[in-house]
Length: 289
Image 1: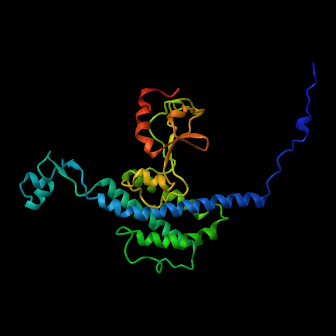
Image 2: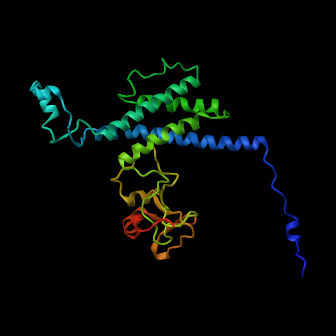
């Protein structure tokens, strides 16, 4: 039996353990990235507020089924009858409940973050750095103050067990998701429901999983709600066109089926989305296996 030649492996060395300073710098880099995401999300909520306010009066049909004893006794005033309507008749609700909920979440979360930042920075007294109008009426002035003070709070807590940039991210993420869903904005990394027809949604867990995701170039400004009226050609000309990318394992569609690659994975520009939508497999058509 021929002996195994281990000469090529003799020069290999075990990786050098990372020093405490290197680990701390890595953690700081992660925290700085969180701060960047926090600023992006705060700017997004600032820009989204008037859009959400604009759709809150849309109203949704609903049925009143409450039983009022005064109604049975014929004691309701005309204004109450007009408000309640005939039982079983669909009338418009005074405002869109989803929009009102999103507005409430924005206001309460921004107030929470503002109070935490002023507590972290005692030199900024909360009663002094508090806008005259309540956040429930318009939180944009609150957001501007948070944007101004957040970098200082970040610098003061960057080496803490829970830096404030991480804390703010956890509070903002669900609110931004609610607002983006309400406005129809596709955020970076969002998964699409359709299944890729070329890899059939292959992941380490099996097949028929959603692997198509939205990605934006770093140059694209996500601080504002996306303008649906912006022409695809205009975005492509600026080099900031969003892409749909398949993250499936070994996804290799024919070269005629996709126009470019993103980090080695097949990608489709906005002008190809209508065609791509027709190719995707309905997720209900197959089981995860």
